[in-house]
Image 1 (cartoon, rainbow, N blue to C red):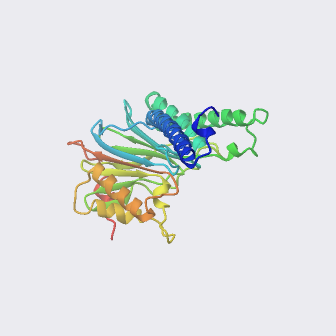
Image 2 (image 1 turned 30 degrees about the vertical axis):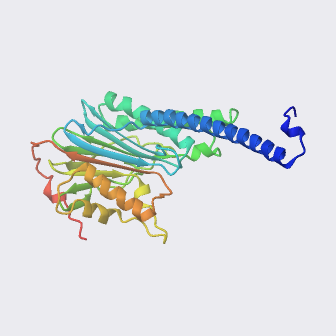
Image 3 (image 1 turned 135 degrees about the horizontal axis):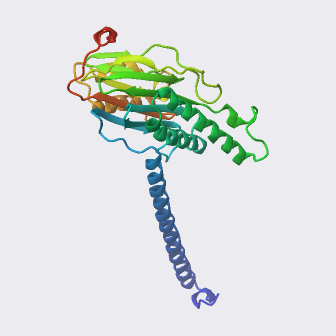
Length: 320
């Protein structure tokens, strides 16, 4: 209002006035946009750090086992979804958890944190794998009660509350120094045993129900799955890998992809992971609609005593 040019009626003055306001407006927009981009980068940096603490990167080796793992979130901008995994070396052997929380998003991430936090303590404290599973079950129940009270303080956790329907599929493995593998499975896909040119399910027993809706049985005996011999590997996954579909609705052929990854070549965790992940992304066009977690373990130990009744007899080749 006090600008001399703005008070003149000539065409040149109007053009000059418009140019001045345009320049000022453009400068303000650029400044605000830069500030927002800096804030967004900072938020993503903090979120990435928090998510890496929750689902922390695995080392390349733990107690003679080579490792490689990855996770894809169905939510854009997130590196952690409703899938979880962890590998820890304990005095009871190397213990592994792979799980899948119902749904994804912030609610699922909170459940992942509760289950992983419980596993990281129980894996060291509990001498039996069944004790670890019971600790996870109690931690999940506690988390769901607290979440229900937080969302509806007066309701508690009744059977009609949506949180009461949440569940987590969980696979627990225990790998001893001699390669003996024991497992407890609650509604999760069984891993695949990998050898040079061989792919076979680790076990075929019916799993227990997922954690959450049903109580655990009184007796929790771990399934004996034989030995993981030197040079062999295990491929663990969540059902997002097998259920991934292409544009025509066809499921991802996980078993053939694994067979191709180990065809006439040794099992290398990073190579197997890259091959399967590349095939999965090609199949889905780079946009999986569900969370996916993949974990490959390889026995790098040189000498493992063979136990009678285990070994070659359970290695069933996959016919392509």
